[in-house]
Length: 115
Ligand code: FES
Image (cartoon, rainbow, N blue to C red; front, side, top):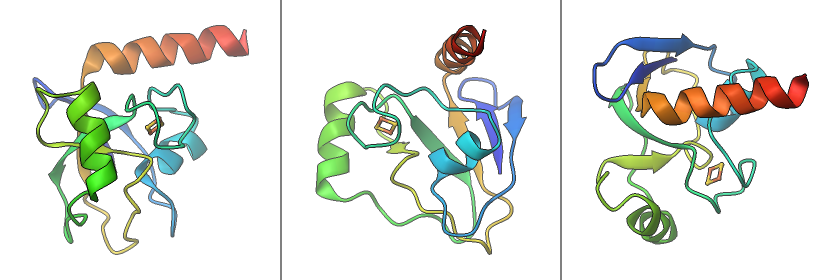
């Protein structure tokens, strides 16, 4: 799975797709944690990404996910919670996009926590 810059589509990171994992889990397991405050509990909305490519594409978000995203990212209509999107092991070409500044801030915070 490839993570790209939301504005430029430039690749930022690439991680394997573990069977049965969420997009969030895949990055976590590869020690490339996505932005989060709730650590994958679908509460903060910080892990949001946009799906750019994939086959099969993930199903549409359920109403509670749509409600959270409308609150935290009203100007990102294609956003999805990475911690809610289950990965299909057949999909080795999934491409998701993130705001690069949020990604970099999360990476810096992770590095500071690890010392
Ligand atoms: S990690 Fe908080 S909503 Fe996904």
